[in-house]
Structures are given as structure tokens and as C-alpha cells.
Image (cartoon, rainbow, N blue to C red):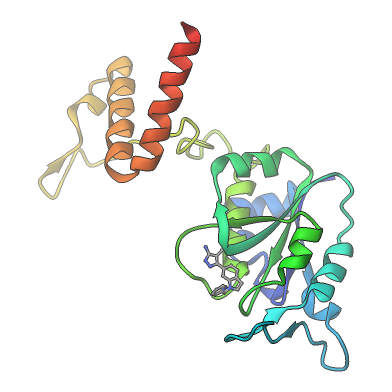
Length: 239
Ligand SMILES: N#Cc1c(-c2ccc3ccn(Cc4ccccn4)c3c2)n[nH]c1N
């Protein structure tokens, strides 16, 4: 059975969306992965298929009901311990390690909320992972789910051919990627770094590593600190 993304959403028409194009789209057509949507509205209550209610304790907006979300989650036939993930601005940051974990299994269940989010009780009852794609507020979980799925699909076997860019160049060693250049050798008075035209592969590898370290240090002090800790840790372990 192909790696399957089971997506619970009020907007099933948003999927596969952009992931139906290009590499991910071709992989979908080749059955390298599957995109299965479940319309949360179909689990709604009463004549109007209600899925939300006012927040207990007052406050703006509406909250998605636990009984509706639970029925939808129960309808997803996954008995293989695949991760169930709720995209939320309140989640812990999504990482490449999470993506690797999700793609190591048979698939992932993604719960896409709307309004002010989902009643906490169903997330607790079903041990749903709560992750965020960044510190800004979206209108719902669907666009975040598309981001997560894009990161997963590119890691699946057979999706990224050798011609494509490195499967996991960024983040795989905890550093940001080095800058990239192509022809022409000079553009707008700016030249490609000489080392990249030298044919000296050892020097190119050294330059790229130095650039990755510089970019990470300048733009992501958090990743740089973790990198230093890991490299210090491993050198101590090696003795
Ligand atoms: N992942 C992720 C997200 C989201 C996200 C995900 C799901 C929902 C469901 C409703 N809203 C709107 C909303 C607005 C205000 C407070 C709570 N919720 C979502 C936003 N925003 N930013 C991220 N990195």
C-alpha cells in the first residue's frame, strides 16, 4: 500500500492542490503516495451538519466540537500506529526530523482545524501531535498541511530523482544550505565565487561547508547553538 496522507478538513477541495503538480503530482499519478480527504462537514450534527460551537468561558470565534472531530478521526482506518497530527499555531515547531519520522511509516493523518481551533479534549483523548509550521497566524490548517505534505512527499522513495536537488540538503546536518550559483559566470557586475569554477572538488566542498556554517550562524543562531552542542557532544564521545 502506498504511503497515504489521510486529511480531515472542511475544505477537501483544497487537496491535493499544488501537490497535484510537478514532482509530487507525478508521484501521485504513479501511486508513490496517496492523498485521501475526509470532509469534516459530513460528521457534523443535525440538519445543518454543525461542526462548531461557542467557546466555553466566552471569547471570540467558534471552536470545533470534540464529538464531531472524534467521529471523523475514528473513520480513518489506520491501525499501523501512523502519526496523527493537528496543525496549530500553538504546536511545537515542525522539524525535518518529524518529516523523516512521518515518512518512515505507512502514512500520516492530518487534522486541519478552522475557526479558533479544535476542542482540546479530543486532541488529548487521541494523543494527537500538535505542530506548527511557523510563528505567524494562518486562517486554517489546510495550508500548513500542504507544507507538511510537500516536505514528506519529496522524501518518499522514487519521488526525487538523482537529477533533482538534494533530497534533504538543508537541515539534514543541522545547518542551512550553502548559496547556489549557475551561469553566466558574471551577471550584473557580480561574479560566481572563483572556487566554484576551480574544479577543485575538495576546495569546493570546504567552501560550501564554511558557507553553510556562516549562513546558519548569521540567520539561525538557534540552529547554530544546537549544531555546536551536537558537534561538541560527539567529539567528546569519540574521545
Ligand atoms: N500549523 C499551523 C498554523 C496556523 C493555524 C493552523 C490551524 C488553524 C485552525 C484555525 N486557525 C486559525 C487560528 C487563528 C488564531 C488562533 C488559532 N487559530 C489555524 C491556524 N497558524 N499558523 C500556523 N503556523
